Amino acid sequence: MNTEEKLNMTMLCDFYELTMGNGYFASGYKDRITYFDVFFRDVPDHGGFAIAAGLNKIIDYIQNLHFDEADIDYLRSKGLFSEEFLAYLRDFTFTGDIWAIPEGTPIFPREPVITVRAKAIEAQLVETYLLLCFNHQSLVATKANRISRAADGRVVLEFGSRRAQGTDAAISGARAAYIGGCNGTACAISDQLYGVPAGGTMAHAWVQMFDSEYEAFKTYCEVFPTNATLLVDTYNTLKSGVPNAIKAFNEVLKPRGITKCGIRLDSGDIAYLSRKARKMLDAAGWTECKISASNSLDEYIIQDLLRQDAKIDMFGVGERMITARSEPVFGGVYKLAAVEDAEGNIVPKIKISENVGKITNPHFKKVYRIFDKATGKAEADYLTVWDEQIDESKPLELFDPEATWKRRVYTDYEAKELQVPVFEKGKLVYQQPTLQEIQDYCKKQVDALWDEVKRFENPHHYYVDLSQKLWDIKDQLLHQKR
Image (tube, rainbow, N blue to C red; front, top):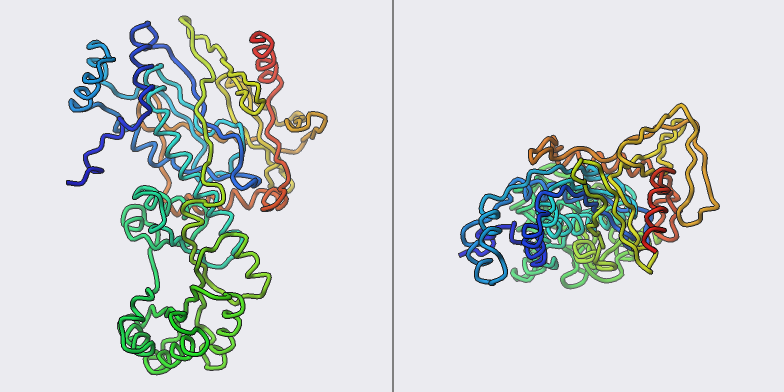
């Protein structure tokens, strides 16, 4: 029996979400309206920005929140929960509101990417799963975007399923990689479920299965004449692999008038081998033959290969993308920002820490992106209290939170609100775009960033500032809590 098919994802939560829920229920806080923010503190790999992803699974999760009788029986067996609370869970559904920055949007530290407004128990219960989806898919989308940008317009395929940390990491990871800019995946089920284009070449085992490398290549060309990409490094890339590939192309494809074909390099000095292979293929008349490369690639290796004039048309990237190996934790958090009192007034809340980076931005907020009208470029993000409006006819002054003496004044700008409504009173109100639309949107939004922000090393610091009203509220709370 497939255990995963039996899982109720409502139970994928930290156990203390349930004990706190019981506590809220017992102390009269179960209907207290709360506001929680999902945000992150640092960009992976010390990059200039991250890519938002994971909203698709969050939507499915919220729509299916419920407790089965088996879940109630399990909780009863722990001896911690009142029968009144268990009865409450039996009829549990999500009735709150959720706003989110759409998938594919470049995002920056300490700004709310997702905001949950809901009754205390509901808002607390969803924390774990929201963070799981947001952290994982945003991590992979961010890494994929870096790798795709390093490839400088060349095709990048996600090859990481066999190294992913679990089934969902492979399936959802391929989707996130596509959002970030990959052209496709080797993971068939991600194509089946999400429409991520699946493709591949051949394994070394195929070549080894036959009595000769040439026979393996010729047979593959005969079986897949319109999609023949041959793995040429099983024995000796330049002495046998490329020559046998050319021979198979000549004997099988050329008589059929087929010029579309390819070879793949998976070991050795790929820059050197690709240059040599390109000369051999061109000399044989196979100028349209594409050269693919794989083998533990990432954005830095791809950059170096291209600087060395590697003749590569397509990169297959596996473990270092699907696991974001260089920094495999995204670090998104879920923090209380406000509550509503008995009269419905929004009361801001703050978390204070000796670690300045862990001090939260209080209150129910809006996130604006400031675009320069002359260039169309994104200049800064601006956090305001929920009831503030930006008057674009007036200059807007922003300070750099990392160095408050730095300031910028914008006069000819457009302020776009980033978060959109996703759920209202428990009902889905968001029209989910197609995966292709998300990828196209992501590319457009990344293109709107200055190149200085997109550097891999020492990127320019992008401003994320607070409105004066929000800053004053934060400052007042900080002084009150001293």
